[in-house]
Structures are given as structure tokens and as C-alpha cells.
Length: 234
Image (tube, rainbow, N blue to C red):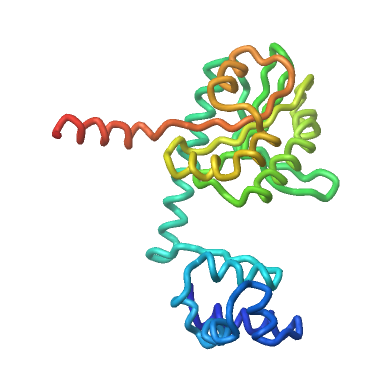
């Protein structure tokens, strides 16, 4: 985070609302002096939670991005995403599903792509899968899955698939960080995606009716092998 730019952004939003520093402080539980420090480029003297309260009072939100050697970090994240897609695709294909990674669509002016679109010919079940290598913004993710599920039957029809039901999966890593993030918003996720890994895997072997759930994938083969070697050395 650039604390100077952050401070200028807070000041611009505050002035846009025609608030004084005291008024903003009252709305987020800080003193006028604290708001002044933030606006003067000293945001790095405060915790992330405090800064989030300040921007929330202004109707905004904080977005952090980790930078490392230009775009190299993006490539690492893309590689993790691709690895998860590959594992899920192989799992479904072994159980009789037809799988289309990155199924693009342009329907009624809405464009995008579905990470994995899978069809079970024996039952007519259609599965829309959103893959995330990092557990993302909750509301945006759920809205995206709902949108793709709504359009999925039209996408399937263009491929000649006769659909009897549409199901939704959110696939995320099975690491502790992802599980904590899901647990933190458990009520929201349970309402939209009530199923979990074991029952979703059981369902995909013999799909009957629509389901919605979260599937945690195991670490990559490379990571698992590295941990096992380390354990033997210990």
C-alpha cells in the first residue's frame, strides 16, 4: 500500500461528501487528529482494520495487491488455478462426465467464461464450476456463480447437450487459509452453497437432481511429494 496515495484518496472521498475531518472521525470512531494523520500520508501508522473502517465510512473498500517481480506473482497464481482445473477435470472425466474448461459465452449481451462446464450424458446433469486458487470476495464470487449458472443451460444447448438439471460448485484449495476464510463466512456460504466435499464427490458419481456446494481440493502432487520427503528426513 502507498500510504501517501491512500491518504489522498481518503481526503478526496471526504471532500466529495463535504465532510470535515471531525465528521469522518465521528463516523468511524477516530479522532480528528487521526484522520489528519491518515490524510497526510501516515496510514502505515494504523492497522488494516482501522483503515478499513475509515474507507467503509466513505462508502469505499480497501483492495490490496501483492507485487513481486512484475507480473511473476500473477503467473504463479494462474499456475495454481490451472493445476486445480486440471485435477478437477480429470476427476470428473474418470466418472463419465464430458468436461469443457474455460467455456466462453456471449448471451443476451452478457459475456464471460465458466472455469469448468461439465455434462453427465447418462443423466443430463450439468455442472457449473468456479475455481479459485485463493478464496475471494464472498459476495462477488457468489454473484458470479449465480450468473453463470443462470446462463449455463443456454451454453449447454449450443453444444447439443440436453440438460435436466444445473448444479454449482465452488472449488478452492484444501489448505488451512482457504478453510479459515470459508469458515469466517460460513453462514453466507452455507445459504448459497450448502454441500461440502464428501457429498459433492459422492453425487458426481451418480448425479440426481441439482446440488450446490464447496469442494476443497487436496494439495498438488508436487507439494504432497515434497512434504513426504521432508517428513522422512525428520
